Image 1 (spheres, rainbow, N blue to C red):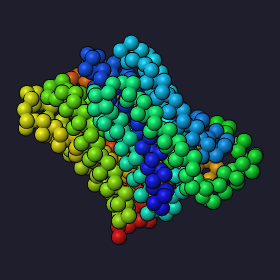
Image 2: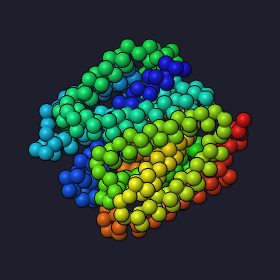
Image 3: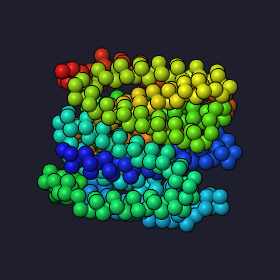
Image 4: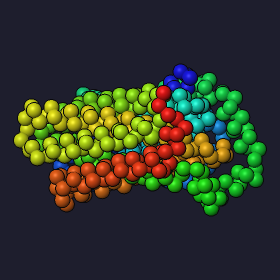
Length: 421
């Protein structure tokens, strides 16, 4: 099990790097250069390849091996970083956007392959909880490394050396995956061989109408689809816009990079780690019902801080506390969510499991992406206070949706089958 966790954690770590570059480093850079919140919000379009990954997931499911897909995509990320190192963002902004788009494209294909490997590798509730913790923690650690740590690197060494460092990281991971014994697992190889033998079934599975019918027929999928599209909306708006509010009123870019890019994300990783441990003791529904209420309460506290515009040590301390609590609860919720998604996927037939999980993961990204792109415009049009009231309403609505499901919907089944120990 330790080998599985290291393998999955490392791959999700390098997968989180492009997200950290765009979610933490790029907004601070653009805001410091005087760009509007609306324009900063539209940079989320660079995440668009994640929305499309469900369309090429059947190809990853059917062609080649997981090892080859993983080595190929990670090597491609190394080459993209080499290209980025030769570009200056001040003179080649479109070139930088192109390389970030390429990084997201490669990372989204890598995600399909590693998710498919995870579905086959993780067995039982205990392994699912720990495996999804490795997924979320690894991804967030990569985001912290890129969004917080690399802010310091770019300050000291510059843009080119930052991407040169990333290139060596990706090369090292590609070599690790090439020799990783965990991919020699007989179960995975058996699934791949069995899949290649099902010629007629494979042909049917890549037909769009057949794929969609099979995906939506998996028990629990309709509820999970609605949930993953909406569960982060209010939180995503607050997490995206509150640091920019602090940049406008209370903190420098360097302070924000440390407190939001490193400290708050550290709390997010702690929340994700705790989620895996709690899943070994309590049911998913039992945990989600309580954590979603706590997240709504924390957003009430964060929204109240928007009325204090004058910078002060007390305000900075309250702001850091607010971001830390929000990221902690967000990390906990993310682990619970990805475990719920994997529970649902494991009910699907093996020939479409990677595609089913990619379908859910794509919708999860789509919900966050669309709202992140619009959140800046909402703040520009209505102001921070009205926008955060809207974010709070969305969060409360999601909490009610989850609370209802634990008694009458999809999460009730999890509670009945997995009572607290």
